[in-house]
Image 1 (cartoon, one colour):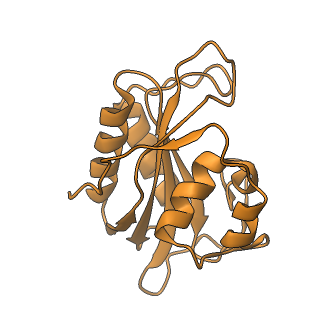
Image 2 (cartoon, helix red, strand yellow):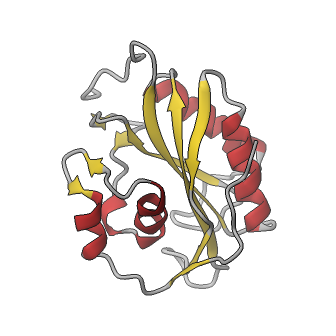
Length: 177
């Protein structure tokens, strides 16, 4: 049973979305994912991080990932947004198989306003967010003063997370939809 109602906000909510890819031209996959998010109903991108390269969390015999984080303003409920993002993944050939295995496009709701949601299909804040440099560094780039519901200030989480294994890609600039 979800905590938080995941209901439509009176007007809109700010959500933070993580994107990653390590197959089929990962930078292009992340770029296309961002453009698809910008086209979602009742949604607009308000900030976007640089792209970051990181080693895979799962099996080591896979390519490095390209990751980014976007901030969106949306009037979609958390569960409607999840369905929209999963549809984008599917259009990009996302196959759900090996846990932490390679993927064409992975899109996660990191935060949905100040809500804490625990459901079968959705947990917000995203599990593991506090330990994943490939999420924390791009998130900090676009929202350094962010408070993570139940976890505290983003800056504090970042201080406890090693930079090791992450590279900010020079020349990666925000994508204008």
